[in-house]
Image (cartoon, rainbow, N blue to C red; front, side, top):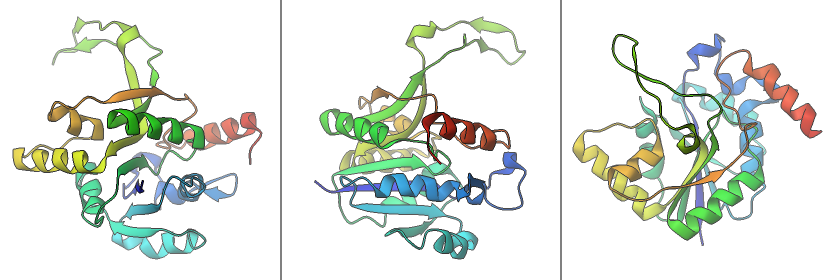
Length: 225
């Protein structure tokens, strides 16, 4: 079994209001991207790690991640294009593991649980039950529906798929001219089932300045540095 992880790190992070990539910001003295890569590098089930970055950031990432056996790929203008660029560098593998580089607090347990589910079903993603009541609104901000909260899941990453099936779904979306912000949707688009593995609310995405102290608090609660 050969598994390849694709870690997405090509976003511009405008909501972070920083003068550099948000993945190069530090949480307790370690950059966001290194925390993410470090966790994946510990997992023996993962054979290769591809980090998708902006071309201008490669020298910075190579410096930060010099201790890790990884390869780099240039990102695209959208998430789907970035993953596609990475996929095109892979000759073959069994499972493809897609993860947001901005989720540095993901645990080995969450990754492995999702991998086992994907190996069983062909497609799986980490997610957590929605805590708030969700409303659907129209163009005038009028509430038109209230989905049943017990059936709602906030999807996180990793999202893991059989490589050949993901390639099929990716090519189908390209042919249709569709661009999805979520990898699960690629599989849903070709009527493939995707299963959810319940993860942890601490698997946050570093998006705004407030997320850095929040991540530090989570690490403190875990007893980690």
